[in-house]
Length: 67
Image 1 (spheres, rainbow, N blue to C red):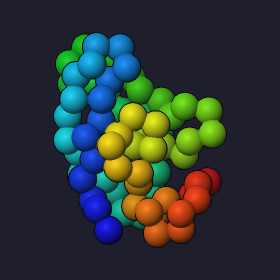
Image 2 (cartoon, one colour):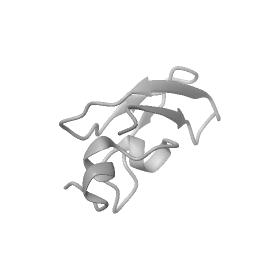
Image 3 (cartoon, rainbow, N blue to C red):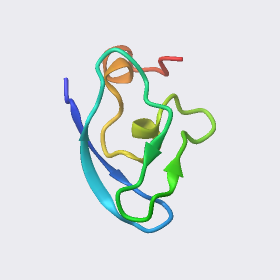
Image 4 (cartoon, helix red, strand yellow):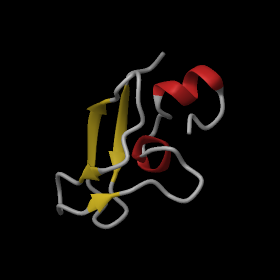
């Protein structure tokens, strides 16, 4: 299981690598570049699935949305 994901902000393009929680989805993320609060896109369970380069651990385990 991959625990790190690089989130790319759709507003400013800033990228930051974060450690993902293994037991829950993360619904909000504050961009370290511009301060925009990221929320999952429709149909995604968390910000890592929407804006990260690696899906969250629950999705990695099941292969489908964890919500």
